[in-house]
Each structure stands twice: as C-alpha cells, then as structure tokens.
Length: 162
Image (cartoon, rainbow, N blue to C red; front, top):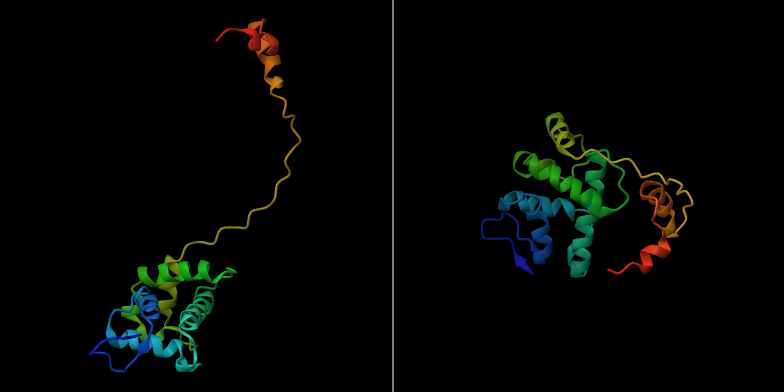
C-alpha cells in the first residue's frame, strides 16, 4: 500500500496498482488524484475490500461511467475503458475537468462534446457471410493451364524432373 504523497490533501491508502490506474487516466496532480480515488470509492468502504477487488471496483465503476458519458454499448469493460481512457487523455480532461470525473450530474457541454469528438467511431458488428462450397482438389487449376499451354496435366507435372 502506498501513500499518494505529502501534498495530497486527503490521506489515501491504496495499492500501487489502483493509484497507477488513476494516474493512467491523467490524474497526476495530487489533489485531483485524491479526488478521483475518493469519488470512485464513495459507494464502498475500501478498508473492507481485498486489494485485488479495489482495482476491479475502480475499473468497473470507471467503465460504467465512460459507457454513459460516451454513449457506448461495448459489452466488455476493457473495450470501453480503452476507448474512454483514450478520449480522456486526448482531451486532457483530468486536468481541465477533474471535479466532473465519475459525476452523476450532467457534464459541462464542452467536456461532453470534447470527449465524444475524440472517441473512436464504433465499428459495426461483423455479419456472417455464407461460404460457398469449393472443391479442395488442387486439380481444378489444370483445366485453364491445359487450355493455355495445351500440354499441362497433373500426372505430367508429377513426372517432370525438377
């Protein structure tokens, strides 16, 4: 467990991986980092949670928020976290709007527009396409070659010296 730093207004005793997660979103200022962590854990008591569950909670809470803010429907937390983190870093939102991170209140219009503008465009789901039956026999190429060269045959190709 680490202490965030001497300049942090609130003493946050969190595992290094949780702190690194929020720093990876751009929260480098100790006060903003402290606020982000407090907001992420406002609905639970981190002291009662095992260390691995702390990071899972932070990731899930952040992914849910990004899904709402960016109006995305990715099913996996990793996908929406990647998209949301990219948008959050590209807009420098952790520095510009740290007080709105994980907010359930409406975001400032400038923040919402900036995040949505830089988030990648969703890719349409792949549609299955029917694959036509095709012979696996390699001799099918012999007919066009026979027409072109007049002499080719698979048997002759096998007998030819290399």
